[in-house]
Image: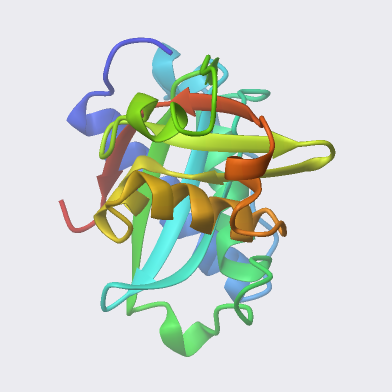
Length: 191
């Protein structure tokens, strides 16, 4: 990931996300991305999550953990997915568009976290800094660093992440999981 995005680059991404959501919710085809005016940072491959809230309550959140396409396109794709495809929520309706607040998290590449035992793991986590990925077999789940605000205790954080993964909440205590960490550059419309 290159240096921190400029305010102008952040505003461009927020604009692209808003435009993509409004087009998708209204059933319009999203026009191809015009990469000509984009900066090199927005054209380089990047991984992002797009989080939608209404009055502070989650309304959708979808993203990618690893970069596979230009950041600007990644944001557009995940903005539409957060609005229409998050399985936890019904699709966003047109009447909600004016209430939606968009937040974008640009991710660093995930790095494996080495630990020796389950009792060792919570102490290796950095609350409010690291996003965490747990993997066990074909199951995988992540929480962005922002989730620490709602789940500040590392053991409870791991419990809830196991639950999100579709496993028993104590799986991390009973089984050595693959654990990776990443950081985010977070910004939103309310900033």
